[in-house]
Structure formats: structure tokens, C-alpha cells
Amino acid sequence: MPTAVRGDITTQQVDAIVNAANSAMRGGGGVDGAIHRAGGPAVLRDCIDRFPDGLPTGEAGWTTGGDLPSRWVIHTVGPNHRAGQTDRSLLTSCYRRSLEVADELGARSIAFPLISAGIYGWPKDDAIAAAVETISGARTAVQDVRIVAFDEGTFDQVSRRLA
Ligand code: AR6
Image 1 (cartoon, protein in one colour):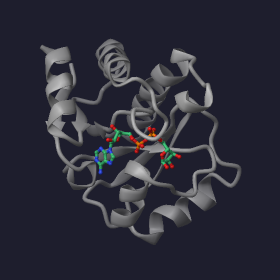
Image 2 (cartoon, helix red, strand yellow; image 1 turned 180 degrees about the horizontal axis):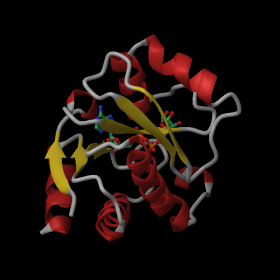
Image 3 (spheres, helix red, strand yellow; image 1 turned 90 degrees about the vertical axis):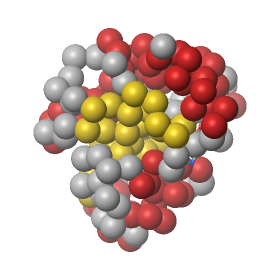
Image 4 (tube, protein in one colour; image 1 turned 180 degrees about the vertical axis):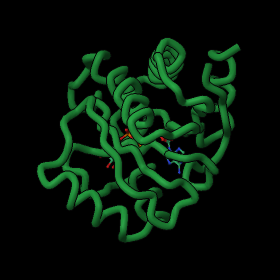
């Protein structure tokens, strides 16, 4: 079962944090911008080296964490609900694939933001349900899985869903 945490994902003391990236994998706004700012240029360099053609929606891949407390950033591309990508299996795939990448890396702790729930406009309640269901149902060796909520209201919603 995941745990709910309130705060900024870039300060989490975990092996890997997950980035809600876009297919181009060259940075952006929201949590993506915060992660690139805190991780420094090594994160972008690694994105360019490892993902010259970007990453498809629903997929996940890793880079260094650069200057972050986390050793790795696992980048995943959520569906853009606002642009009409409403296939929920793409959203659940982001959580499943990120945990698979974490297992390949040997990560023991990971922190997720609410993928697609910001700029990509996935309805918050369902974004939380998708995160909790998929993480809870996944077979993974990761022992500490956190869902990081940026604001108090979202933290309360995630906590209620986990109760
Ligand atoms: N820590 C934790 N959560 C955060 C933080 C933070 N520092 N900053 C934002 N959130 P979003 P998306 C929350 O928009 O919807 C970018 O431009 C935020 O409140 O970051 O998947 C990418 O490059 C929301 O609940 O990601 C893509 O183009 C959640 O993180 C696009 O945005 C996700 O919001 C991806 O949009």
C-alpha cells in the first residue's frame, strides 16, 4: 500500500522520484520544471542522451537525479486529458511501468506525483483513484511507495482514498 505525503517531491529522501514528463522529454512546467530546476543540468543532459526520440505516452524511463537527494529520476509520460487523451489504461501504465523501472534499478523507495492531474487536466478524484489502485495492485520489490500531494486539499483526498 502506498503512503500519502504532503509537500514538494524534489525534497523527498527516496531512491527515485517520478517525473510527470511529456513525450519530448526536454523539460516543461509543473513538477517537471521543479525537478529539472532542483536536479540541475545533468538531468536534461541524461534525457537528451538516453531519450533522443523522447518517450511515448504511458512509458517510463530513468535518468540520474543530478543534484536531487534521489539517485534517480524515473520519467513517465501521462495522457493529456485536456487534449483528448482519455484512455485510462495509459495513466495506469505510467504507475506500472515506473515501478517496473524502479525494480530494474533496485530502488527500494519511490515517490510519485499525481501524474496527469495538473497541466494535463485529468480529473483529480480519478487521478488519485488510478494512482492508489495501480500502486496497490502492482507486484514490486519497492518497499516504500509514496504519493506526494503538493497542497493540503489534495493530501486530504489522497489520505481518504488510502483509508
Ligand atoms: N511536488 C509535488 N507535486 C507537484 C509539484 C511538486 N514540486 N509541482 C506540481 N505538482 P503537472 P501533468 C503536482 O502539471 O498534469 C509539464 O509541463 C500538481 O499539483 O506537473 O502530468 C510537463 O512537461 C499536480 O497535482 O503534470 C508536461 O508537459 C501534479 O503534480 C505536463 O506538464 C501533476 O501536475 C504534464 O502535466
